[in-house]
Image (cartoon, rainbow, N blue to C red; front, side, top):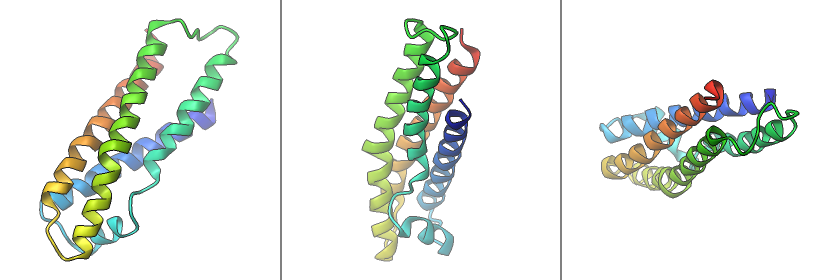
Length: 138
């Protein structure tokens, strides 16, 4: 369970940081820090959420029936988690690549950053909603 929580916190913080840098790039903030953040390609921190989900499933399966997979909140959290992964892989990561390339070429990254910002913000909202379900266990 501890590895699950650490992965969730690390992935969520990494996702939030990426969203912050995309907001800065969208707003015309093309300073050294923003260029350096996107220079190495897409960040890996949001991907901590994937093994965190696997560790959460393992924790649920080994919980001696304290968490049951047939409960609606478990499925709801899993679906939200999956949708967040889609937002990250289909929207955020490609946008990070585009923003990095545009900034390296000395061009404005506003529209590409805006698309990534929308995907990243959606992923962050989905992860936070899934986390709330997991904590509340309604």
